[in-house]
Amino acid sequence: MDHPRGRQHPLLLDLLTPDFNAMDTIGTMGQDIKQIERLYDTVAREYAEAFSGEHEKKPQDQVILKRFARLIGDRRPVWDLGCGPGQTTRYLHDLGIDIFGLDLSTRLLEEARRLHPGIHFRKGDMLALDFKDHTIAGAVAFYAIVHFSEGQVRKAFREVFRVLQPGGLFLMTFHIGNETLRVEAFLGKPVQIDFMLFSPECIRNALEACGFAVNDVIEREPYPGVEYASRRGYVLAQKPHVSG
Ligand SMILES: C[S@@+](CC[C@H](N)C(=O)[O-])C[C@H]1O[C@@H](n2cnc3c(N)ncnc32)[C@H](O)[C@@H]1O
Image: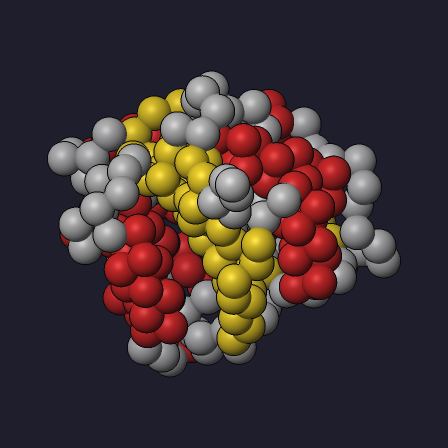
């Protein structure tokens, strides 16, 4: 669904024309987790308003999420990691998936609970998941790695691999590119944060290095007027079944 430029929601317009400065190279340092948490606490209400119904405007996301739901079937539980205001959690929940949401930001979790009162959301860190090994059937992570360095991405993937049951599925999305975008205003608030873009090869290599089998890599163009104008990547990976 396209919005004519002049009629965009002011928050969305702000999102689509952020104060981005592309840096030359991918940041390797990784950002302080506290800084990420503060960012999303600061913009929680605005983020929820801008993104809550986004899957309605993204037909390819709907196809990919429905396929994920079919593959998961009645296996449980599934966790939405870096769930934000819970729009993906809700979409899968409405497809019958037994899913919960986890995020770093207390304020975003409050938004998620307010918008989706029937779903359990809780605080947690994808870089140090407090789940036992081999206990969850599936995980999704929509744009949850956008502030991670490559090293943090690998750490998060190792954590997801550790907690998945054998045969467990992981669906993740990311912005495609090779640069880091330094943002000084986000959703109308002054902030200081980097958004990392990754190549599909980088994501595939990081998943395979953890032991995942990469089943699918899908790339698409951005939906004009609906989202920030970066190409999008979706990867479906599976933890192998134990052999023998
Ligand atoms: C770009 S938002 C994506 C939110 C939501 N999945 C969506 O698609 O709109 C990134 C989310 O990841 C969360 N996040 C970032 N680092 C995290 C971490 N280490 N553990 C858990 N959540 C994290 C942020 O709080 C934020 O909600």
